[in-house]
Image (cartoon, rainbow, N blue to C red; front, side, top):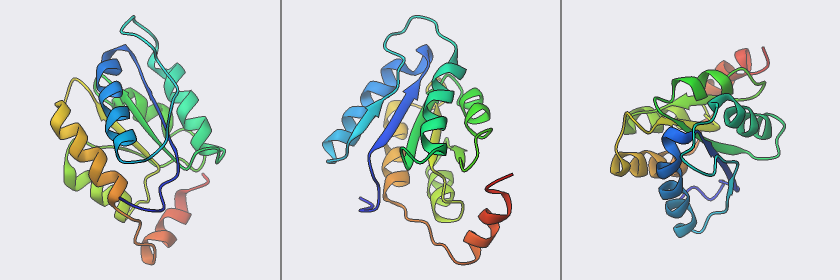
Length: 148
């Protein structure tokens, strides 16, 4: 586990409610704190409400890292990346999750609950949490777009 990971905020829409619960359990079992920003059931909701809640908390620095989930992950990633200082990465495989941390210092992991299964989701979360940012030349690249 990456010792630099602080508490994480997680949010989802109705399509990902079940997966969010499993991810929360997974994170807590690893000794990390997780704040649940909703939704609280499988009743239909508007995904931007929860994407905005999580991304704004990461953008302002209240949380260093977050996880967003919806049916495909596309909507949540679009919402989150509109916020200053947010680098949300839509990941559906291990390599993308690792590289999003290693080279892009992603601070929000986004996944599609209807696209990936539970087992793969847990492996992606594990890889994302354990992978540190390399810095160096990658930091200079991030600084070019971080505040636009």
